[in-house]
Image (cartoon, rainbow, N blue to C red):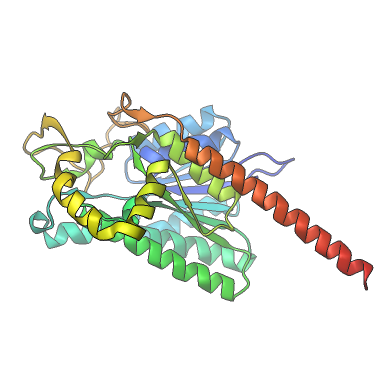
Length: 342
């Protein structure tokens, strides 16, 4: 199983955006499963904190500082990961940045930067992974998506655009792998609102402090969904959190209603009552977890509001495992029947 010791085999996992948030929680989870984890991000203090957490959990960690907007840097990180940890079995794309502001208040260079990190970063990671996985005809890529990749909201045009792009890009790559009868798998996990440090880190031009739209989940819930997807990559995508499923269904059947609803409520629901100080530091161009002592870990500042479990995910995982077991059993019966008639 992915990231777990299976006999004497331990898998190699690469995670972008591993210094904080969902990437950090995912790295820690794979570490507990005994994986060799290559950690890619910009913030060296956050990376060192993530590496120590992986080691404390029983895994092996390799710190690879890199900006995912730079393909050469990502490719070099992948080369080091394979040289020092072994062939990459699982690649998880998580890294992103964003701007919280009305579209008319975002500059072209800012929008470009968000796109280069939050969309092209996934493209670069996928390229680097496939260059190594396809010749071996094995490996899994997990994209960390978002419900906002189906239903965009105000004040996050750059981020929502990137997440929509990731869906289309991943779908295209998946069909190409199917055409080639490749055993390399690619899947995506659409995430709900998650309590990560991003709401203190992103560039914001909002009058009040940004917040995730409730319901909010802890990053460990997201990490569990990523690990499960890595173990069951034949499925096209997964929806983490009941709110993700509800959002995607609502968009499918009542998009115009959501337009009007979000036009009325979307600004207020993404801000706390706390005023945002002018000139607040952000991580658009430089990481905020670079200096010693600046490691923020996986969690943001909304622990008191965040859910530690998703019953939707638990039921989905049980159904997926049961369905796979039935499919395997049915396949075995057909194979046995064919052999008897040969």
